[in-house]
Length: 135
Length: 81
Image 1 (cartoon, each protein chain N blue to C red):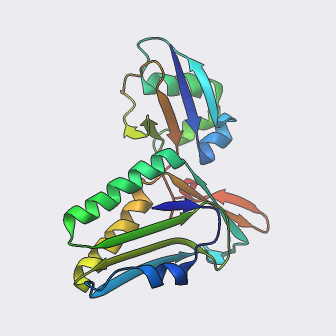
Image 2: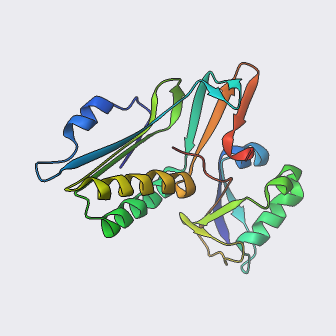
Image 3: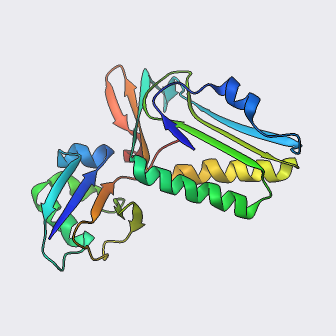
């Protein structure tokens, strides 16, 4: 797993995912969108508690290998400024059969959103808001 | 005893710093540290029900007893992805 400020090279990562024993490579690409609850969004800022994020992410990936016969798992998450249309998170999971890779990929993104200490702040023309504050 | 307190996102905005060394009583818990902070920072009250606590990078409850040298972190619900 990687946390980085720089843009994620999605095409390169997809090209290197999986190997010849895999029948499926499932990817999830999270993207910064330009609207949120009817407000225009100019950009996002992600803050990270990197030491803990690394340990929580490792738990998720280890759990995935325990639960499904997956062969490879790549997770890259941005922090700092993410502009509209850019990838904020990239996940690739490979396995001999697609069902396992689909399930593992879904588990990984859903659990990241619940446990990995990363926070998103949306910026608008008239201010900004931490997303965790409004649910 | 001394601990390190880290805060993130909206909690950092309320407390006003992202890392601080704190001198706390030997029997202090995560909850008692939060109580002390809440006395100085009124804005923390509205976050109490959703506030998340980690000690040494592991999620824990407010009843967790702290030890010398621990790193305690306070933050709102996560919102990555």
